[in-house]
Length: 391
Image (spheres, rainbow, N blue to C red):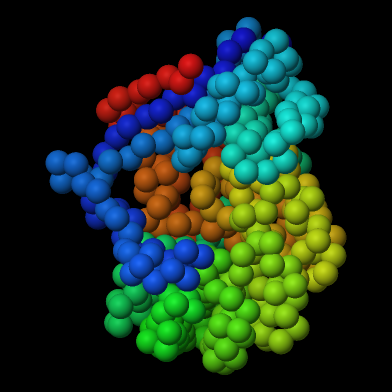
């Protein structure tokens, strides 16, 4: 079997604005006061929220195609078509390990948009492999350890003003979610007022959930060491399961300070590329939870290797949830003790699922495993308003 073509489709659609991605988290650029005041823009067309996503399709001479998406960044599409496609034509798509290794040796292929493009290709190759062997990908990875995967509710986009966060937290618990992650809006530039808002939100969520549910807190690289230490001292009594990405990913010494003095488990990794960038964090004992994203860190091939590395260091492995399908298959192949949860961004996944027939929606806090060959992604033609093919 040989690869005959690689395409990237740009699909456009529209959804009900109730799923608009409204509230944003703290961000590194918030250190500049003019940026810190900006809210998350929501653009509506004819009363609906536009959705634009990209998908990669790998064609073969045996009529078996590999499909993966959505891919969010247009830069990935350009690299796939202009840089990676010429290499793939004529290759055997079942040789995933060799293809992964050869694609990454581009001089800029170890991280950034190139690795993100490679990640999409890798996931599409796994989808093709599953279809070739007529089996779900999790069976090719060793078989399922469970029939359904527990999900934690990731709340990016939900309002966090006084009263709103607690009310939503109770509602999500009532839907069966036994764990939730909430996002801080403010960092050091927010001053005392911003810090008070952060602390009020965290206290409100703990009060709403009581002691029966896990909750996690995400800083999205928006803090510095002194701010994080002060916040951790005040958050400690709330017993969050983890504090996520308080610092930027290259601040290993800073993570060391927080691990030594903060007293709250640390999580990070969505902005780390491949196991090579995870290893220094693990060698120094900086993480309690490893969170690679398959769409960015190297696809399913690399995600599985990072999981094994994390288990070796007794670090929990809970991938970042930009998309769900690749994570679902990898997590299903791992012991629950290694990966206890799958991240599910409640609002964002409504957009990510928009073009799919099989829309993955948790029921009572769990996602069932798909039984279709490959990853189980099928496009819903009725949801597509327009399609552009990159060339």
